[in-house]
Image 1 (cartoon, helix red, strand yellow):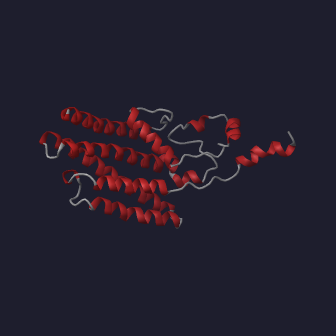
Image 2: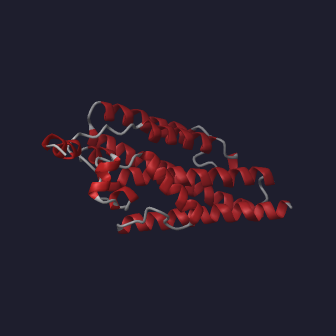
Image 3: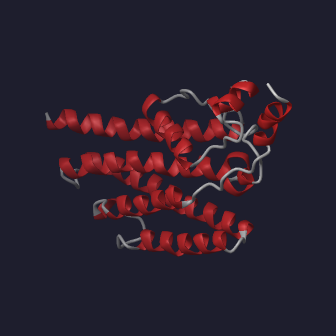
Length: 228
């Protein structure tokens, strides 16, 4: 190996990372608004079905604008507010769904679709929380050359440095899809799979997500058995 070749890995390790695209997170918010608008009237929070989606849009648009204009602190606060709105709406709707079971206010098909929609919403909501909170959020992660510290231990973080260089992962950092996969496996396995939590807040959020997912699946299974 020549002297120039021996310096190549070091030079590559210092190359700046490509900025993370924000459209997957925005798309997840729009999907949440659609899932909420599709719920039966008895499971909606705040009256008409357009209230919560409109409030989400009122927060999402300035969040996109502040990100593009470089006002990252305001963008972070708007993101927290947006996540808080969808989380509260989801939890209240799930509670109303539980109350609707003995009252038989909705048909079996409506209850099945509502429970399934809330299960999917649970994945999207917590994926958004993990994405916004881990290692200070997407902007803070973008300022680092590689993701080496955070609330979750992703497999790439445990790789040997030489293996990282050989596989081109020396500047790896998690994107929204990584947190979406984490949220999906948490809702299906009810436990960490390949990405264990390290911080206490991450463990609390994962426990809350698993509990909500278990409730939604129990409602789905119970209603399906009653239909049969």
